Length: 297
Image 1: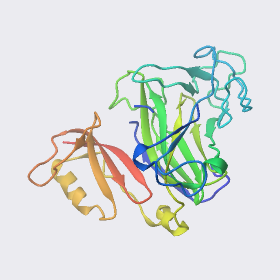
Image 2 (image 1 turned 120 degrees about the horizontal axis):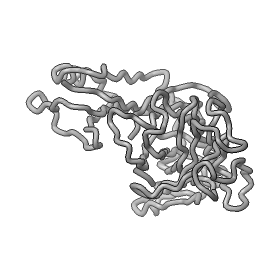
Image 3 (image 1 turned 135 degrees about the vertical axis):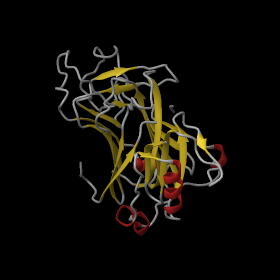
Image 4 (image 1 turned 180 degrees about the vertical axis):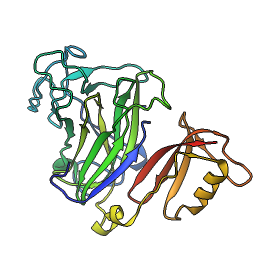
């Protein structure tokens, strides 16, 4: 998936609860002006999903007109994504989704290309550095053998973030709304996010939020894809191996350990070791983030 911009980073994240195209203001920065355009530093713009009638396979309209009529969202552009569901569990999470079934007229073959483009009007919102947060509905019918691709087409190229929307090793089938920040990027007119289902199973397409965090950074500041490599550890290790690994991490890379409920593990030293169990280890550099599941024995 390479179009409009060039340079390719691929970042992997694990499945991780949720946030009208609605600008959302942050009170603690309301007085600071944006670099240009309508948003101020700290304001968020949410690309919501297309309105639908019916539910699941009976959802309409099957074809996205992208004309802004009848509550259509022209900034949420579906391609072969024809099912929708309003989810109230763990917070409202209206979403469209691809399916591994083909039961209704016009529905695509599950192996056909299926994606949604999220295209905020950056010409009016203003170019700048944006933090991007994505949402999805996690459940056992989601693809677990391949990730949903989150392709960010930004001012300095394109970056692909891989997220597994279902991980049976760490999740229960509770059909919950999940969210994840996928990084900060320089976004300009024409920039967008494409979430893509590349296989025959199911991927959900919920709202995506763009939060303005500052002005455009220099091109040199965005070359981490070529200059930095985040190397996650092996998936199974001893406590001693983990402690040795943590000491070898570059000073330019921060790391955080979470338990499977998302609680941050603090105070890890030679005298306070993490107990055996399943953890999520997040490595974060200036422009990349990687979350891996590890088992400490």
